[in-house]
Image (cartoon, rainbow, N blue to C red; front, side, top):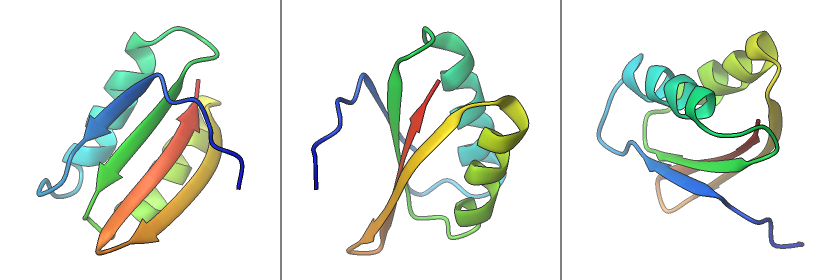
Length: 77
């Protein structure tokens, strides 16, 4: 697996829906186009809500990695 350049990390572990998705949207609005964010969460509802946010807002959903009870999303603005 090729390692992706991550420009920003958003750690929202312990926060429940809709907070992780809202914070993801805010973070993506703040960064420059072409930058990449890693979102770290343990809220299983984000498996659907973050990809949905990306589709609605036109962000590029690159990857979802689940390990050790954590869900990591890689999203490019």
